[in-house]
Length: 581
Image (cartoon, rainbow, N blue to C red; front, side):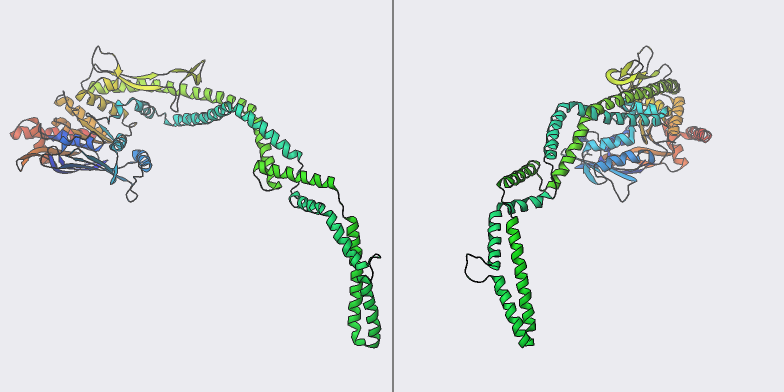
C-alpha cells in the first residue's frame, strides 16, 4: 500500500505531503487544478524518464518520495529483488522507500531505501507493486507475458503448474547429463584408454607399500656387500687371531687375563670382581668373533640381484613421478580411483541408454500434464471472456468482444502430446494472450494494441474486476477512467472501483461526482496563487460537509438544490456499499 507521497518543486506543486488510505482513494478538483500531476509524479517515482522541465519554476531541483507498506502478496517477490541488489532495510523490512530527484541541469537520482540505484530498478519494483493507467509501462494487463499467470490464478492452476515446473527442471538435468555424455563420448574413450593403460601398468608392478623402506635398505646392503664382508672378517681375525700374524689374538689375550686374575683372586679375594669381569669380557669377545665370522660368511655379493633392485627402484620412481605422488600407498590409491573412473566410463553407453529412456518418459509425462492444463485454460478462458464482456457492457462498451487466445507451437524436440510434439516450458505448451475488439466490425486484436485513454482504462477496470482475486498487483491507479461516460455510468464505475479496493489499494482521479461518492478517502486538488506563482494544493476532505460541498461543485450546481443532490449521491453510494460489504 502507498501510505505516503511527498513532493517538492514538481511542475505546479511546490510542497505536498499526502497520506493515503487502504481502500478506495479519490482525487477530485477543477480542470487544470493539477490532479493528474500526482499521477505523473508517481510514474516518475517508478522510473519514468526524467525531464528537467518537471522542476518547478524558480527551483533548482524537484524531489518525489513514496513510502510503501508491503503486503503478503508481494513481500516475497519484492524482497527477492531487494536482496539481489542488497537493498533490504533490516530495521524495517515491511516498508519500502522510493525516491526520485531531478535537477534543472538535467541530472537525476533514484534511491531505494536511501541507497542510490539505477532508475531501471525503480521500474522493476514498480512493475511488482503498481498498475497505473496512463502513459507509463506499468499496466501488467497490457504485458502479454503476464497473461498466462493471471489466467492460471483465475483458473486455480498454480499447484498443477508447479508440479509441471518440477518435471521440467528434472528433464533439464537429464538432458544436460545426456548431452554432456554424448558430446564427450570420444574424449571419454581416449580417457578410458589412458586409464586402462595406467591401471595395468601400476598393477603389473605388483607394488607393496612396505617397499618404500625395504628396497632402499636392501639395495644399499647389496651394493656394499664386498666391503661389509671384508670389514666383518677383519674384525673376526683381530678377535680370533691369524696364523699369518705373530702374537696372541684378542680372545686369547682376554682369556690369559682371566686366568691370571683367577690365580690372583685365590691369593687376594678382593680381586674376585675383576677376575669375573675378565672372564665375562673374554667370553663376550669369543661370541662376538663367532658372530662376525658367520656374518662375513653370509654376506652375499650378487651383481644380478643388485641390478634387479636398481631396476625396480627406478620403476617405482618413474611411476611416482608420472602420477605426481610421493609414496607407493598413494600410487595404489590412484590406481583404485582410476579403476573406478574406468568402470564408470565403461558404463557410459548403458547410462546414455538409461538417460534416453528417462528423457522419453519425462517428455510424455510433461505432455500429458500440459495437455490437461491447456484444456483447463480453454474452459476457464471461455468463462473469463463471458465475465469480461459482461463487465464491459456495464461500462458502456456493449459491443466489445473479448477472448483468451491459446496458441501452441510444434517443435521436433518438444514434449509429446498424442502423435505430436510441442514447444514447452515450466508453464506448459500454451502462449496465452488476451484479445479484444472494442468496437463493432473490428477484429479481435492483442489487448495492448486496441485502445487508449478512457477506453483503455475501462477495459483495465473490467479485467481487474474479473481477475481481482488472481491479480496480485497491490496498488491500482486510474486516470481518465471516466472519459466519455456520464453520471449514471459514473456510479457503476465507482461501485466497480470500490469493489476492487477489497483486494487492492485503489487511487483514482475523476471529474464525476457519482464516481467520487464511492471513495473511502476523498482528496480535493485546487490551484492557488503563491508568490505570484500558481501552486497546486491537495487536502483530504475529512468530513461529510466538505465532501458534499465538493460533490456539489462537481455537479456544477449551486445553492440548496446542488447541496441536496450531492447529499443524495453520497447517501446512495453509502447505501450501495453497505449492501455489497
